Image 1 (tube, rainbow, N blue to C red):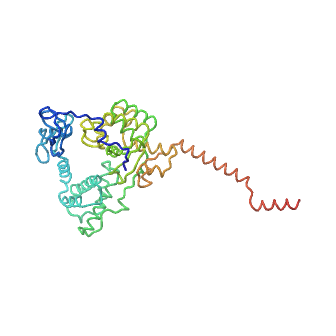
Image 2: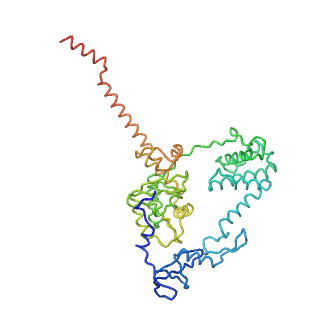
Image 3: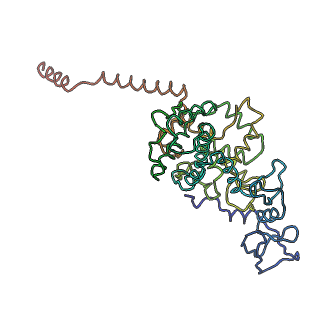
Amino acid sequence: MPSKHSIQPSTLHKTRCIPRVASRTNQTTCGTSIPCEGPSCTEQLRQPFIRKSGGRIFCSARCERREYAGRRRIGTCEHCDGPIMGISDKRRKPRFCSRQHEREYHEKRLLAPTEPFRALLKEYLNTTTAYRARTLEGVRLSLAHFFTFVVCNEHINALEAIRPPVVSRYIAHERARGITRGAYIGHLASFFRWLHAEERIHSSSPVVSRIHRQRSAPAVARPYTDNAMSALSDLVRQSGNPVMMLAFSIGEECGLRAGEVGNIRLGDVDLEQQKIFVRLPTKNMRTRTVPYHDKVAHYLTVWLAQRNVDCGHDHLLHGKRLGKYDTSDLARLFRDLTSCRTDITNGFCFHRLRHTWATRLMNNGMELAVLKELGGWEKWNSMHRYIYVLPQTIRRQYEESYTRLQEQANGDDDAVSLFDFALQNSKQATNS
């Protein structure tokens, strides 16, 4: 849990932010309370408060941006044909007025070819509790692809007509497309188990484990080499972006996932004891506390000196528009930076920093039980996928173990058994 030494947003605001004192009449107002004019904001501003352009008063820059975005139409939603209000972006044109409409639009296009089964699929996806929200998107994709194949390729419109040969032909179809991972087989099996539990079908499941189970090669660790890490560190440092430098150092010294880095709050960072509290949500829904070292401590100091306290949230990292970072934002940052340096990065992946962190700690003597707790892995098999045992570690461990064996063998030669000791004593007594 965050400790008393954590960074407090209110403290930073008092020490680093000096708001301008003004009112609508450009006069200092004392003892008054004026509501923020941002959309759906209930903040009451007391003196000193902030006056923005156009005579409007806002409690933060975020409320000002929201009010500005709500007055400008920048497009038309492809789902509802309604207006899209916001701030224009030269890099990409928005297509939807909300994320919900974007999901509904893509879901409609995805499930359109599965018309005979569409209502059943939507019922299953809306009622199942076996999957997390982010996993449910993959389940939706798997079921949509399978039933599109059933309708368009097999010309089947009834559940009872789906037999094991259909699943076998679908697997061959997916392999022809280059899909080698077999997660969709588990999604199909769970769906047909649900049909049996709901008594929607009475025949046996078309997914047969011994026939349709996809055996793939075991996952292996993919740590960066020391030369690659050195080149990446130089590249990130040369960018001059304090957010990238801090995020990269956290991945290198703490082994956090990209989503966990973006979810760090100011109160989760303990500057005195140099540790970070990793809050929910995590992959296995367990919190943990991870220590950090000198590089993270340095870049934390650099970033906190530049962080905008008027960003409107307490997340540690924010972008130029003061919004918090998520996994896709961090991936885009590093992709744009390393896209022209494939000679040293060979396609940068932030998650490989976690592989590198685990591999370095294990090869330098950390016990696996401690590493498992720091990394937040629930199972040993999951942790082993992140560890690559270096050849020099194997040789060093072998030499140390064999040296101990030799020392033990030499010590046993000097030892005398109880029988030999008694025999020597009896001989000495007879001679005397």
